[in-house]
Image (cartoon, rainbow, N blue to C red):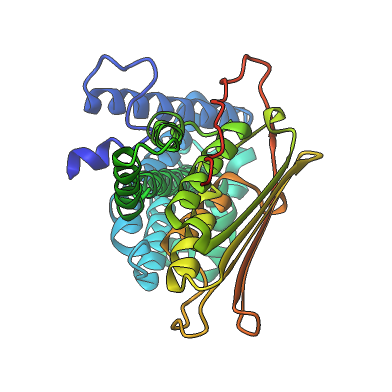
Length: 394
């Protein structure tokens, strides 16, 4: 498990040090960043035109406080207190980092005063702390109100940077895990096509072969296309729209053979399929649900209607199906529908799709409508679509 977690840390490997052990690379990276921080501090305090000793003392004091605060925040405050909702301890940790810097600054100022190294230009700045003693110059509210502005610009930035990096890592890891979970669900969805459906299809195929029915070869062709698409083509982020509609057509032809004249299946499609691409396997759960929860509940006068249109960069899908009045009410949607909803939210902006799922008890009808912005097809040669013949009916 520990090894797995390490693979999810995008900043664990350091560019330029990839051949070094992880600990050495991280150490060098931190040393470089702290050297840059100290260099920036030196640039800022050198503008005061103090002596080298005084300037270096400011740099050393602020850098020491920043480093101690950074690692204390990273090792204790963030993982043990902040992430566990221990707000008082978190606040106490930040206050402790501030007072560490304030005490170091007070000690440095006192040492400069003892050595008579405070210049006339810096006398007022340092004695606003020294003149009030340790309590009044460090712990009193007056001292805190004056010192916070210096603390925010000298010590706090590395701590804030650490917190921002943590948020970005967490966000990226959450997104990556969500993608992995969705990929697992998509793989499950592909594997789900469908043991029950596949069993019935093979059984029907066996009967056709025994009877030497002319529809058997066409049925094999459709089933081959269905399996080939789910196994080999649907792993891509986007697929040609004509491949997705071809898959849907193959599935519907097999369902026509499975149910025969008992179920009316009406499929109307129009549009320039080759001009667009789409996320794979978005339509199938809606169509599968129409058979699983509608037609399968009652074969008496059952029907499924599907309309699919691609025009002006938008796809319009409408799936309607009947259900039995005696069928037990069910929640709209299911695992497959929830999967599609998550995939839509992950792959498309909210303005690029609209999904509506409704149940009409007065007409015993389920209805799904999807409006989706399509991606234009790439200039490269598209994947050739398999020409699928409709299954002839006796």
